Length: 338
Image 1 (cartoon, rainbow, N blue to C red):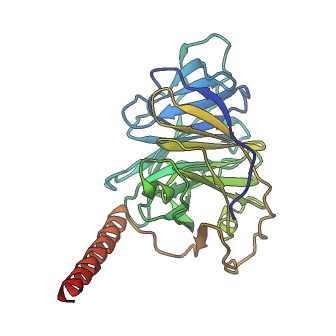
Image 2 (cartoon, one colour; image 1 turned 90 degrees about the vertical axis):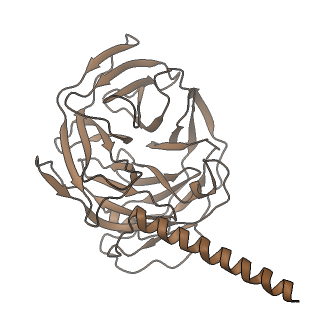
């Protein structure tokens, strides 16, 4: 179902020249007047605290002992101790060849008023992770209050898998657990690098109370009501879709009370607030039935479906192109005979 909403609000443009590839966004809890962003691959292991009204950089935080292979998302949520925390997802894997990916957690800083300070966080908790089906690309992290964290993979043809992280890091590489799938369809919403951007998940967020899950593509946001913290049950239902403002490479999303915050890669990029539509109640946690199909452009698939790797998606796409080209050639030959 496509939600009809009031017009989005342009909040600010990111003026800091060091932030050229903002790949996520999150609203502060310990510092509520702050939004946090991070660059993806190519930057050091740091994130930025921006004034939520003006976009001015208030501080930069380096995470000691961490590396930035491809930081694709950021989240702020209370951890298992109830402490507001910043979570950083080093999960990008365009070539599907990383033996492990990582998620870092640090206590959220209390951002001081002095603009432009360079600071260092305490040593992070580090989740070393692998997927049960082998390497796969992902750009989306959502964290619930209490620290339950979820990854959503990015697939060329719109079939994204949702995984739950282990509750605690162990020092060893742990395997994430598949809990569901989301299948995106072409929507016609403008924006993104190309038409396939309508099919690829680029960011995720859970609301501060855990009741709303948002997953975005380059062009649209998909929203689910979550009951009793059961994300697996939520994504079995049909989502509400929100068409987002056109962005060249929109990747960040945060559920901020009654609105969505979104950002995009690119120098001087815009940050928008998009009104959050009313959502129906989520199904009970014990619900097992498959939802009745609706006009929603994304539908859920059973959690036990085997996830596709990035290479499989590419092969399927190439196969479809070959079939289309073959059919076109056959039609032309028949036309010539006539």
